[in-house]
Image (tube, rainbow over all chains, first blue to last red; front, side, top):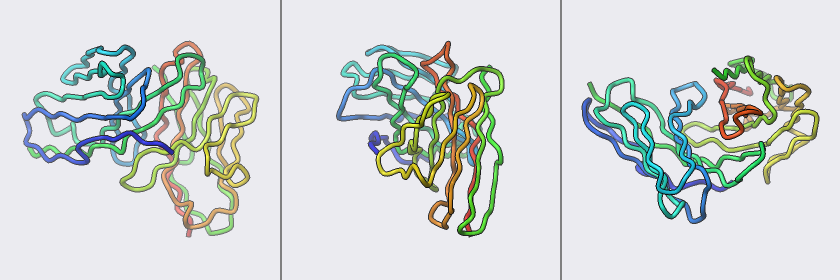
Length: 114
Length: 116
């Protein structure tokens, strides 16, 4: 199946540093979602974006829906050890109904050194 | 909240046997459930979409006769891996969308399947 281009694939940072990651697509999405997955667990929704240009925050996390609808960014400020995990972007094209299918990025593995 | 559970969390089986994985929405009614497969260090790949009371819609390349999906109620969907082989070993994750919050998919904790 189709996947989004997510970068970087992995990051090793020091506690307290800021983190940025992004996803790009060759086609338009109506919704962008960012999930975090801990080892051996299912993904947990962090932020959902519904409008082009939208900028949304959730605590230390901020995400933006690109104006072209083909990209999205996630920033984490002042990282802490519990931020460790795999972050996935996901895009959705359907504009209505309950059969929403998500297309996932390949993930960004974040490691935070205390 | 919106909690989704999966059972079992881990299963080890012999090659040729069938394995059933359950996905339940604990505190909401799920109009649609999705089944994903995730190989180590890879992303989630959608296998099929299932609506309560109707046949599942499988993604291209996913064998519907091998991965049987039943969505008999608004809170339960099952995935049966028939005649499992070692290459079916993977992390299987379900998600459920709420009828009143169809924008959001809530994921289960996943099931680790190992086929010997």
